Length: 344
Image (cartoon, rainbow, N blue to C red; front, side, top):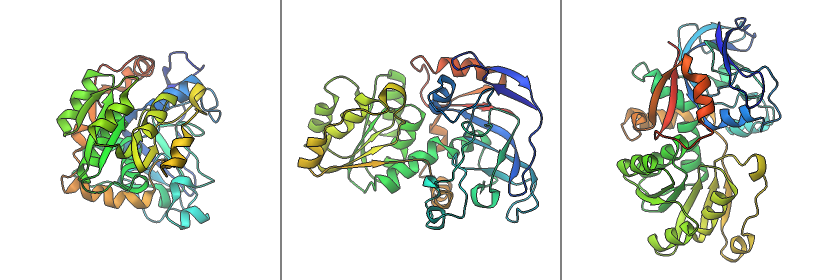
């Protein structure tokens, strides 16, 4: 099969023929129809994740059709349209049994410690637990983001952020993940302030129904002024020391900060205003992916039209464009929303 390969960290990936994957007894081989180009892929390419071993196939959000299932798989069969959370959980531990597979201590991740979805086929381990059936009406290009961007946003806003009707929510960083957070928060009935440095991203957020605010050194104070004392919920959807700090500083007393953007490299351990956290009884919550059990609620909102996935996709590229798309993530985005590569 054809795949996009990272041979060296920071070096432009290449397209190459590689052996077809072997289907494990508990797993499935999925023909990838569409796969996302995510900031997390860029971090893997930069060497920020020590689980990556070279040469490596990146990619962790995808939609496709099952080509083969292992002999122990009972809930799926070849020909099924599927996606999967980017966290392949074990399905047996305490966390998985509690429905919290997104924090499974035995998890594995395509595009990081497993070969990823920037290939014609990808293996999903523990298929009965991790695969998610897709409705026939849902386009593969739109469904690709359910494995990470849209799914991660849904969990961050609805589960970790516990966003309620009429609450004021600040989303800091409006790339593909941030725009998905804006969309999910608006669907929950919140008032949303979208923060970014990109005109295209701010325009896209405003088109969804958010109030746009250009990021700057006084952005937290601006959010507090716009909300009459601070946001109920702030989501850092970018992942940097500055945006994490701004999110906390933008909150009203007893507000909730959700850290959903990855903090890696030099920003892995940022200084945060803990004095404010104590004095104002703020809450800092992490958010990591989406449990497979949460997909039903998200797919219902998509079917009902409350979540319009078409508003989250910025551009569609071919598999030949993937190497250049990886390199381009090191520069400011020129198109709002997520980039999706179509393989079929």
